[in-house]
Image (cartoon, rainbow, N blue to C red; front, top):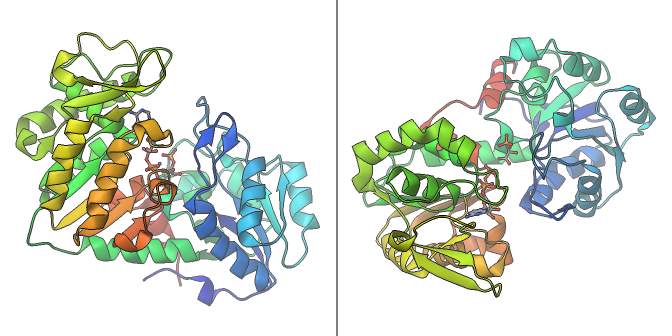
Length: 404
Ligand SMILES: Nc1ncnc2c1ncn2[C@@H]1O[C@H](COP(=O)(O)OP(=O)(O)OP(=O)(O)O)[C@@H](O)[C@H]1O
Ligand SMILES: O=C(O)[C@H](O)COP(=O)(O)O
């Protein structure tokens, strides 16, 4: 590993730590998940060494329903760390600076959602990001910067790439272990069939790298939003926003050409759902064959049972299975059939398996599956599939470049 780690950081310092606490938000309530548990290890270690620990993280994207304050995150993090985590509703203004200054050795503070600051989001190179006000103002308060947010390392945002140019910088324990595991996986080769299950809501992340995964993956099994977009490209009347949704149309605009090209050039490697599930008028799960859909009038929330059976067969014939994104809205048990069915099939075979994604990895615990039945469960989604393709992660690259 060519970055500095916590083993290289002298204790007793003022440390700014970038975590990835991006979590599902249901009816305004932030859901606990493995990201809290994993990052708590880094935070606890720093606090126990007598550092003043200030955490910085994001939640959602501006304009989305899950773009909320980190106030609840502080309470959830505190439970996992086993000590108090203060919260300040400010990121780098006077209130935040005062709260940082008030901190004693061993105390932990969480700053407000960093994506609420204008400087954070537009992607730019580290050099440019290091000069923005957010980075300059906060850097003056700290002796060191720790990046633990492996799962956001594919974004060139200020809090992820700006600080290593202006502060001594280190990888946190999650960054260190995820980087090690995912890099090792990327260099593995397999004799038998390699399958990737592609689902979730961030279709753009996966579709963008499917070309590059061609060398690694023999079969793609699609579901979730990406799955419907592929069905739309194949000519079915699905894969569009209805009822105030905001999942399909923008992603269709961005990816339609790539999807069409993928279907044309490697259609034989791509398996699409043959049936889909939705909520009927009685609130029950109902299913429809894709070829029988005349018009999309409501959301499809899972793949159907025929599709699950077909995917189950493919998984059982595979030597390696990678999962990125859920096949349906698994948080609602009625629509967990696809995601859980595939995960169970993986768990029952002895194939090499990786389940990735902050949301998706939660399904393992929610449905009583054991992490031991998978080779690696990553809390990273987009970053882990990029690592598989060997694509660089800008936030890791800058940690390496600035390491001494
Ligand atoms: N058909 C669907 N309709 C609505 N939500 C869906 C559907 N299919 C999957 N999902 C949702 O996708 C979410 C997971 O997808 P997402 O793209 O966020 O992946 P992730 O595993 O969390 O990866 P990342 O770490 O990149 O965010 C789940 O919370 C699930 O409810
Ligand atoms: O949840 C994630 O995958 C990371 O936190 C990155 O979030 P983003 O896709 O909104 O940049």
